[in-house]
Amino acid sequence: MNYFKNFKQKFFLNKSVSPDLNTPDFANKKIFTEADYSYLLSLIFERGEVLCLRDAKGEKKSCNVLRHDVDHDISTALKMAVWERERGITSTYCLLHTAWYYGCMMEGHYKHSLLLKDSIARLDELGHEINFHNNVITTAFLNKINPYDLLMRELEFFSMNGVDIVGTSTHGDALCRKYGYRNFHLFSEIAEVFPPELSEDCPKEIHEAIGTVSMGEVGLSYEAYGIVGKKYVSDSGGKLISHLKMPGWGAATDSSLLTSNVGVYALTHPVWWSFK
Image (cartoon, rainbow, N blue to C red):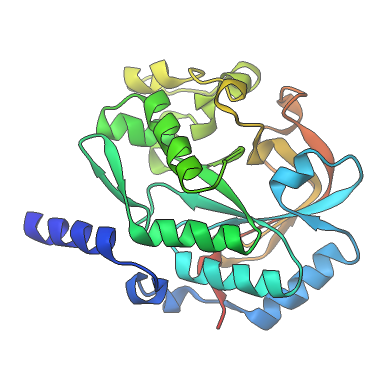
């Protein structure tokens, strides 16, 4: 078992260029097609301007936003990114640091894969925003490392690869549900106005991580769940759903982090979509 694990780590760290060679097979999860995607966007956005989260944060007039939680399907995400670029759409791609393509955690530090670096470069070349899909509290706890140090190393990694991360999107890990926190509770600006409801058996390391990082001090200007749309559309669980408002920490936020000029907030997960 240890040999196989080490083999996989070495393989993923050194494989490059073609995500199709490396990506696990998600074919059985594909529910929607390119045609479905085109139709969906035409319905939810109509004639309104579509922006990535970063640009919507600073926009004064009404706009719509499009976000993708890449999770584990980086291959489809890159195909979606090309499809959108060809149609003049700029969106936000949230890269998960605990996904298979990201790399391996070794002695408390990530060894980033070449596939990750190639993917970052490609998304940036296509003009899309890259967002950090935050699973920091959970990862730091499981690996017995300092969450602030982990976050800063990853932000620096992106910067060294030509991308300045200005926003995060919290990832819902199983431990979050078990112990009553969300990974965005790492940030003091959020923890103060929307405190976690920690369980009695929550480990002290998670307790101690809550509110320990200031978003402003580390160069972050938004959390994805603080951008509230008048209407929210998602494909979560492989089903298209619509709400009147983006779920999250919404109206409870620090006003300096809140963006309320968004009409439609659309979130997709590439794993449910089939792109050529």
